[in-house]
Length: 282
Image (cartoon, rainbow, N blue to C red):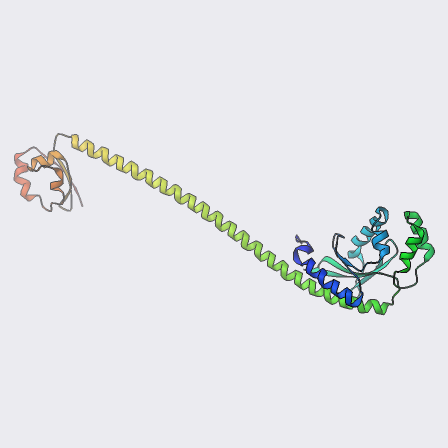
């Protein structure tokens, strides 16, 4: 999927909701995207925030644990449980859109049994932590039962389902918006192409009309220079005549011949005068 979880869900609104939930219940949460980026976190244990995720070597282990979530088995109750590489227990439920994990809601950090103090002392020494401060932070991590985990994760699983549906709706909306945007871009391109082609056609038409007018003018000028009379008759109606033709009919100008329906009146004159060129069109 080409969209990130942050493109599909309002993280600020989600975090505000979870802050209120934490005030009421004291149940912490983490929201991680599929790349292990922390999008929201409230109520995390100090051993995590002040030690494991604060220092480079242990922070690398945290990142590796976060990225390994998609490989943890999900139970029929809709969540998975695992021990991170720094020794803390966490539970999580995936948020899926179109069958793909896009984020995880995490519950933790906690223990299901009393922690091995010697193990954490050894780990703290390896990582260069102050032993007393580290062990004090360790002892603040709650030890809870699986029943408590089930109760908490039941809520988170329902929340995950709601976010999955919201993400799916938002994904469809974005895809529709993209299609509309693409359609608008294609339409604008088509309009631009058609407009350009129309402009070219209009320019071509203008050039042709200009050439026709020029050709007609040169033709008329040529006709006017001829020493004999010429007129054009269409359906026995004169539509054009040159000056010489007008003189033959004892008229002052060629326009006086235009529109004449019959030329039988002029036949005797034509016989007495010079020959004519008559162009008839049907």
